Length: 159
Image 1 (cartoon, rainbow, N blue to C red):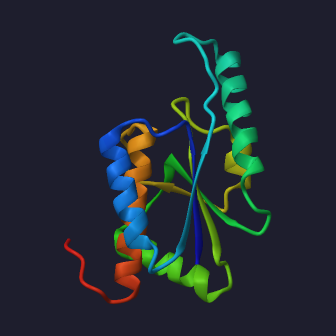
Image 2 (image 1 turned 60 degrees about the vertical axis):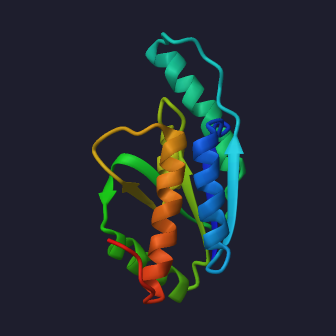
């Protein structure tokens, strides 16, 4: 399986980079991982609704340019479906079984995702009703993808 995680903005925090490196290393035996960072759009702290929409659109254009046409796209969104780790594993295994070997997860920037990403997504996934920093969400997602592969293979993983 080819898994791509596309995020907005560069990962800066050392502790998050260390965690990402660890899960990237662990995942190599299960899947080909591709971590893609697209530039975030610079914007002042206070934006009008129209300006926020423009920022999200520019970031979305960068994201969409990185998504292969034949990829199954899962966008992370608060309004998405919540799943257990076991459900994620089952769904990923089903994708592999039915020939959807390219899976792209999309994590938006600080303003969220533009509607064009929602339209391109095959599904919306929520990890919580809470909001997390998008860079931290990248690490949490990688851990859950790793956990899903362990579950699929029937390998032990702490609960």
